[in-house]
Every structure is written in structure tokens, then in C-alpha cells.
Image (tube, rainbow, N blue to C red; front, side, top):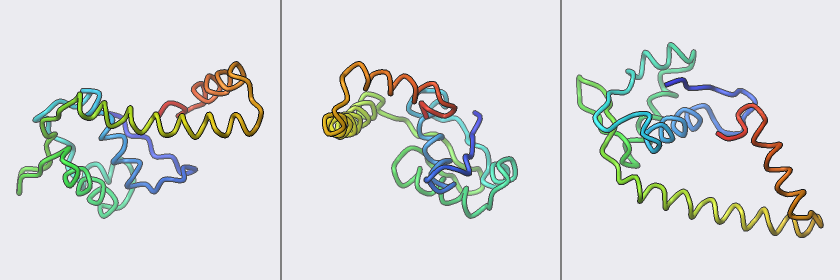
Length: 128
């Protein structure tokens, strides 16, 4: 798993870490029961504070994506992938409704909107 920290992102570093780990769990890149890197090791690899990685791990555990075992580390929790997919689809629908509203206000055609999506998807980090 390759976590990328983007200094130009509006998201704080802990949230970038959390979201990338969550995505890896949801997509199956990280399987249930798989051990995550230790908080200290991940902090060292990413060159961030241990507090930052701990916050990301704590939030993942709070949301049910991981379980921590004292003295052993953090592990990927079993997930209901369909439930998670539905959650993401609901969020996507809300964002797309907003995008359509703003496209109409800007008098953007459907073709122009789709072209904009394609351009954004081609940008580095565009589909993250």
C-alpha cells in the first residue's frame, strides 16, 4: 500500500492517511485480518508525526474499519462491502446533484461537463 501525502491538499494529513487506508480496505486491497503498519513505522515512512498517524488509526477504528489489539497492532476489520459501497454511492449522488446545479448556473452543456470530468480525472491524484 502506497500512501501519498499531498501538501497542497485542503485535507489535513491525518485525513489523507485515513481516507487512503479506508479506500484500500473498501476496495479489498487490504483484506480483513491484515495487519496495518505500526503507527511509528508509518509515521517514519511518511515523515509525519506519530500523533498524526495515531489520529488516522483512531478514526479508522472508531468508524469500524480497523481493530486494535494491545501490544500487537491494528488490523483490518471484516467489512460489509455492499453497505460501504451504498454509502459511497449516496455521497456521490449528492455531489453530482451539486455539480449539475452549478453546471446549469454556468450554462455548461452535458458534453462540456463530461469533458471537465475527464480532464479532472486525468490530473495527478484526480481520482483519489
